[in-house]
Length: 445
Image 1 (tube, rainbow, N blue to C red):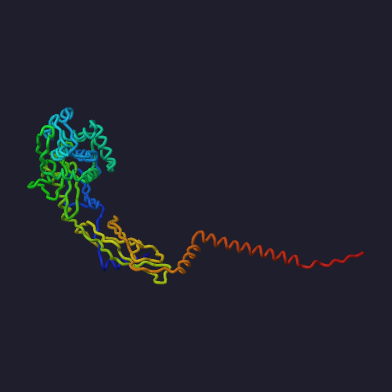
Image 2: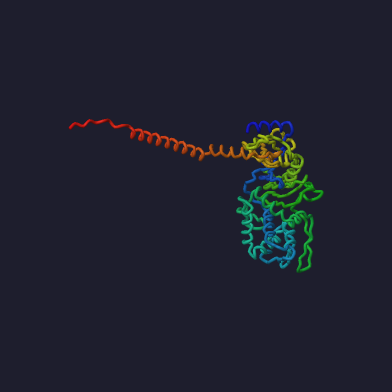
């Protein structure tokens, strides 16, 4: 085994140095002022940045992202299904700043209500959706939200209402919010909604149009200070109780990243506004630009590289077979990473039994950086070696002899032989004794 490793390391050092992707988070070249942050490459599952990612925080209006997910899970036809604003909902949102000018009795499609909720964070639209999916019970809808969070593996998330009104029992983490956002963005209808800059929706029972503007994604506003052309949504929130929060996605180089920032401060300790004021936008954009500039997709190894040798038994055609990588491996990696820091761990058996077919997998190559496994590549035989029935039978016999039960059998045979020998000796002694002449006796009358 040591011979194989030495040979493989020598070949690698001459032919290829591997780039890597570590699963551990990296450190961006700037300081994050948000209370928590989480950045992930959605294509590879690589965590790019973590800052207090499991800290429970109030998410504010980001609760609407989960509301959208539950709605999409339960509504079959977003255009055909409609609902009207009920008086009790109008009373609940009276005085709210986040509204879409929907009035009592206005009936809209579920799709249009999603636009109103996500583009303008409209609270009446949110509660209308919750009432509809919850069969007239917003409390039931909240139960569905928490059940969905649990199903996604969000262990530190709990909601008390669909809109994100302040409640100390409403909380999530940056990591959990990332799971929720990734799940809802799998719905193409939702991705289309959050990517829109403007939208005109219709009150179907009164033939009235409502014009919406996207106020929740500063990264998607052309000409704005935080505009990022590659951004595709998703939502932000600014409340005194939560600070500024945002969950967003952006793509570059064929890869999609997702960023969650929670609790970006609205003001400094002295009460002065932060600079920049919209810190959740600024930090999200900075994280994307940092990832775009410092990471790229590179080929780790091509198919047919890294030839080593593995021992072969039971063949007269040869006692070793050369092996090579059977797949191409590419990964997202930091551009400045020293490639020589990658470690290679070929895992080959002590031997393979003939016959061996060309292309047969005989082991794997494990790639590791900083104690994190990057992936494995199969090692395949480069030639075929026929087997020998004689050598196979001989090897089978040797294996039997060297096995536990084989050793037991040998001991039993030896004991039987010794026992038989002892019985044979005893039998011979009795036989000789029976042939021995009796001493002569004289009788006197």
